[in-house]
Image 1 (cartoon, one colour):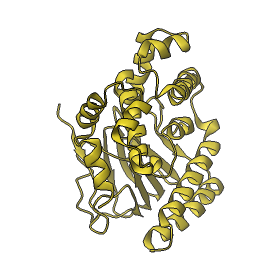
Image 2 (cartoon, rainbow, N blue to C red; image 1 turned 60 degrees about the horizontal axis):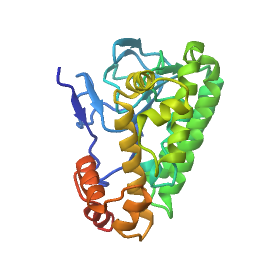
Image 3 (cartoon, rainbow, N blue to C red; image 1 turned 45 degrees about the horizontal axis):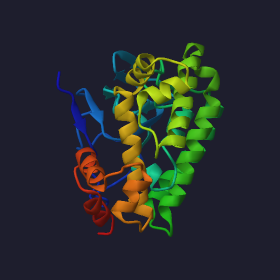
Image 4 (cartoon, helix red, strand yellow; image 1 turned 120 degrees about the vertical axis):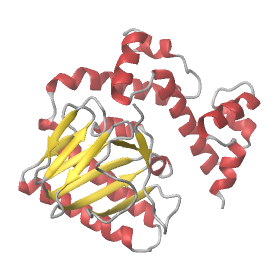
Length: 285
């Protein structure tokens, strides 16, 4: 079955990587009531609300004081009563690497992973108020045009996610611990060896598990193979270097373990849709 993959529209920021707004029902980005996927991460912070949120194959009744976490790999369908109140925070993975933070952080906080039995977390009034007190200034900062705005936005978002992760420790299913441990170890190994080892078997052997089991975990979590995950992390590293370093394409290729710079350029274009040079030039516009 074809699932629509959607993006939001921001006329003020066409190539957006971060967005936050009040829950509203007059936006025309896409129809939330039709099953779809995002190409971004979403946090739905609901103070009050009624409705149904279908995430993958599970229906969640919308309740007050809840936070819904959606990764790009989730398929979801949302129906909300028009009296619902809350905040929607959206960001792309690029928002993290542009602030010099790796994808490891998103995996470590354990909020957006597909294996979570319940991606909808409910908090008591005091905890929810504490989290709201972080989101409100984040929303206000986004609406202003102040010096080094993105750094402030990123700091608030990171603090918010860490606070949620801390408060939600006792809400998680204990049965997920072993899979979480394997994922965190795998991501940590990948961070260490990103420039010298792309073999699935290498990571599986380091974790003392089979390649099949590692693929199964990553497939269940992200809906992709370990190889795809490694390729995406490699592209993320390449983008970071292209963004923050004046190194030549040849130097970047060698730094990332490619013996043939031409192959690196072809690999990058296949994954991103543009060559490394075109991507770098687009950042300067």
